[in-house]
Amino acid sequence: MKEMQLSRIINMEDPQSVLDEVRAIVFMMFQDFDFDTVDRVFKDIVYLFHGEYPGYRKCTTQYHDLKHSTDTFLAMARLMHGAFICEENLTREHVNLGLVCAFMHDTGYIQTLDDSVGTGAKYTRTDTKRSIVFMDKYIADSGLSKEDFKHYPDILICTALDTKINKIRFESREIELLGKMLGTADLLGQMADRTYLEKLLFLFYEFREGGVPGYDSELDLLKKTIDFYAMARRRFATDLNSVDKYMRQHFKVRWDLDRDLYMEAIENHINYLSFILEHHEEDYRDHLKRMRLARKTQ
Image (cartoon, rainbow, N blue to C red; front, side, top):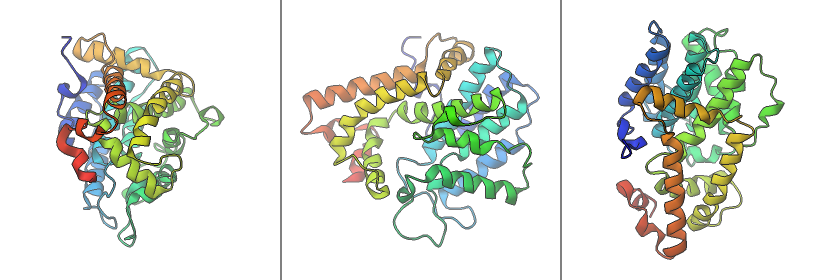
């Protein structure tokens, strides 16, 4: 099965297909898992990104969009499954918490109805804190158990690249593991996306609106993505405690593949990006053609 690629396993463009796969993965861990909360949150957050959730506008960011959230959601489920296989002490409650946090981790980009200036990209430097605020309000409004979800701030904050995870006083090893897995799933999900390189053009404009320094142009961001990849690899190994290793265990059991399809996809992206920068710097857009996304930024 050497031809198997991450994007070919399920239809990642369809949120329902992602939810169905997450359900299959979780049932491999717990056959009696109660999906009511996850189903409810999934429906509400899809509504939120589509502009159908009371009090909020539809998603206005093209990089941090619904698909990025579903990508992270699935990556989180896969990591938890791999950890479960390796006999980490993850309970039904931990899995429920991890899935809900994963799907809500970028709600901070969504604007309220009275926020009509610019796009959600203006919150790029504060999106994680805004996601925590949104989740706090959602838990209160929806009647979810505050006790069951009390650790979500420590888990969500692990997705912020400036977070010093080793400074967080997690209540338990399992909550620490969930935080590090979500920080890992966030990076793996976006960087392994089949259209990652094309969507980097969207990211440049989100950074520009959000006041993120250090990127002068689309091309400049593409060039610095090579260094970002190296930084991500270091972060996986240090701050995130190499929990990406659980991906291989998941694919071995779920698909009989002794491979990490996420890292393979990411390395393919970086290799192709390096080829573009070396041979086609002047016409780089002509070589970013998947789903014609590059045209949407012109």
